Image (cartoon, rainbow, N blue to C red; front, side, top):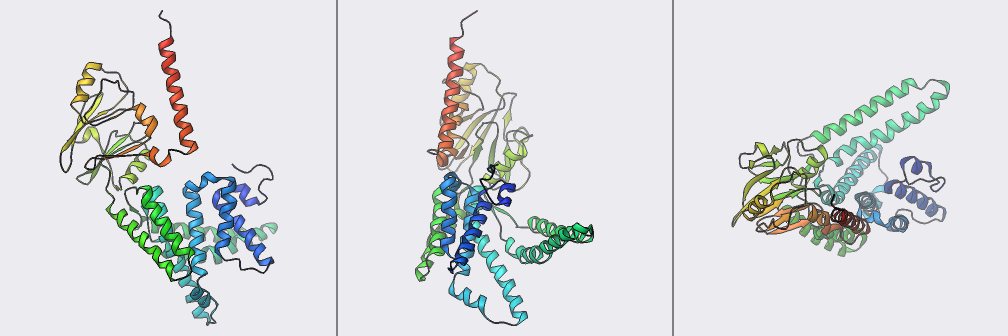
Length: 414
C-alpha cells in the first residue's frame, strides 16, 4: 500500500491504498472546495490539469498505466461535456418535474455514452476489448446507487446504534443483488464485449491526440480532432491478427487464424496466459491443443507444423520442454524450419531460415507477435524499451545469465 502513516490525510485514500483514481478524486474534491471558497468556477479543465500535475509530480510512471489514463480521460470527457454552453443552458433551464426527470435520465445516458466512447481506445490498447452497453446500464445503476443503496446504508448505520438496522441492511442487500444482476446481465449479453487485435502505439497516439483536441478546444476548430480519431478507427478495424503469439517466457504460444480456431502449445494452459493470448488474438471460444491439431506433428520434445501465407508456406518447430536433445539432430531440424521456438537456450548451430526464438532472445524482447505475410515481428520491448522498469529488469537478467555462465565454466574439474 502507498499509505504510510499520515502521508494521506483522507481516510478513504488510506483504506483503499491511495491508488491513482482515489488520489485524483481526493485532489479534485479539495480543488472544488477551494474554488467554491474563492468564488471561482470549479468545473473546468484547470481542475483536471491540477489533479494530473499532483499525481505526476509524485508518481510520473503512472502516466503509462491504464489506471491514470482511464481515470483522467473519463473526468476530462465529463467536464468537457458539461462545460459546453448548450449543456449549461439545458442544465439550468426551468422545467416541470417530468421534464427534470427526463433531463436527468438523458444527461445520464449522454454522459455514459461519451465515457464509453472516450475510454474505448484506452481499453482496446491495454486490454484488446471494448463495449458500449455500459451507457444503458448506468441509466439504472447510477440512480439505484445514488437514491437507494447509499441512503439505505447511511440510515442503517444510524439505526445500528439502537440495534434496529437489520431490516434496512436486508433492503440494502436486495438492492446490491439487483445491481449485481444488472451487471452480470449486461456483461453476458451478446456483443457486450468486442475483442480486437492489439493496436500499435502510434494508432493509440492518434486517438489520444484527437480526443484531447476535441475536449480542450472550445471553438469550431475542435471538430478537426475527429479526423485523427476517424483515421485511428479505420486502422484499428484493419489491424491484422498476428499469426503467431509467443509469451515472454517461451512456455506458451498460440497459432491464430486457423479456420476460425486458435491452437495453443499446451492443453493445460493457465487461465491468465490463455486470457492474454485470446485477447491479443481477438479470439472468443475454446482453444485447441497442438497435440490434438491435425496439422501438427508432435514428439515428446518438439512439435512441427506448416503455416500457409499469401506468398509462401512457413514451417515452424516448437519445443515442448527443456529436455536436452542431440545437438547434431537439433541443428539439422533447425535448418529445415523457417521458425524455431523454444523456452530454453538454443545453441548457435541451430540456424533456422528466418527466426530463432529462445530464452536468450526473449529475455531481451519479451513476448512476440509474428505477422508472417508482412515478415514483421512486434515485441513487448518495443513498447517499453527506454523505461527504467524495463531496462533495469533486462540488465538484471543479463547479469544473472552471465554470472551463471561464468560459474559454469569456472568450476574446476573433479
